[in-house]
Length: 214
Image (cartoon, rainbow, N blue to C red; front, side, top):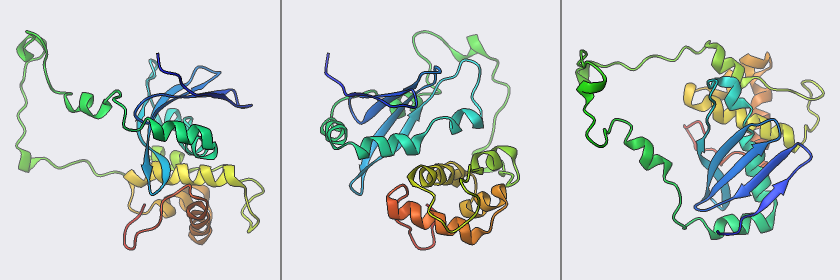
């Protein structure tokens, strides 16, 4: 069995590093998540997440996985970061390959034994659902706990990690993530833009690309 690095924090969290960039985050309340990190522009960043909840997943389940803190935790410990980087090329669980076979049958099982295929869709006739900007899930993901209220005073690293996490969560749902955060928290969008700039300066978000949110 390969050695692994195990860390504990006052938050009741444990973080262990495995192969291929995978780390296991666990909380004393029973929450567990597996996160795969990759070296992007010299920083280890989350690129895959495996999360299971027998009682069902929802937006709150995702918010309770502190991706920003996990990223900061790994990058903030030189020994741990070196350990993870040293095993990035190791053979590891390939979740992307597994889910790419989501419609593959195995063994002698045939679809007819499981379901009656009664619906046929023409590829060119399919229209993906339009995401509702006012959907409760989007607003819930964009809400922040702002220490000290809306002021120009520095908020601290933990707050900017929270902003970065909220930004990444709403980004797939809207082309205007900063506006979503502003609307969800009832604050000026210029304030959110200032916070996002600070997130980028501290390395919690990647560099901005002209004409593209991200």
